[in-house]
Amino acid sequence: ALAGNVVNTGIIEVPIGKPLGDILFNIGGGIPDKKKFKAAQIGGPSGGCVTPDNLNVPTDYESIKQLGAIIGSGGLIAMNEDTCMVDTARYFMDFIRDESCGKCTACRLGTKRMLEILERITSGKGEEGDIELLEELSHVIEDTAMCGLGQTAPNAVLSTIRYFRNEYEEH
Image (cartoon, rainbow, N blue to C red; front, top):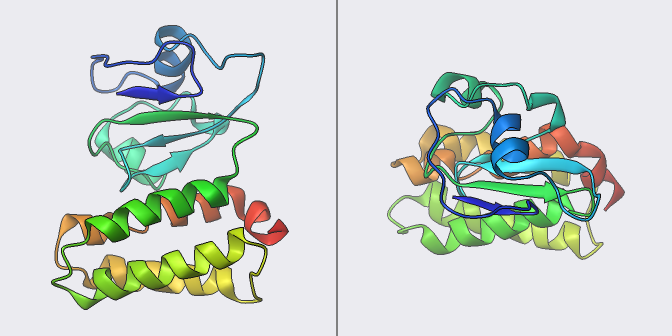
């Protein structure tokens, strides 16, 4: 499912391994309104963000995993230069928190706590150490959650911190 800031949105079928840039620019038609490509969320809400540096990466399971994302549901959301990556992480964490079944403490409380921190940061009330706390919570959730949703829940946060830490710091 190709969506977001891309000329041609919709359901597409491509072979495993097709480079991300081919999907976004040849099939998707690129970013509209002469804006620059900033990132793409790949793999749905449990996926992660990839950057312009990764446009030649093949869309196979291992290559995408090395970038901090997953193939997941096959969703690919293109984002232009105007997108706030901290808001993006907050948006996906809100979804993940709502989808948690609540059976394990790591996912039930960890995603709730991560969302609270992200909401505080995006409202301009971030505190020293919030980024490190998000990273720590992320690793605990990944290591202790009972299911795939919980184990991949922190991907959007970790990948946006990895590639766009400056935006967290600016907030």
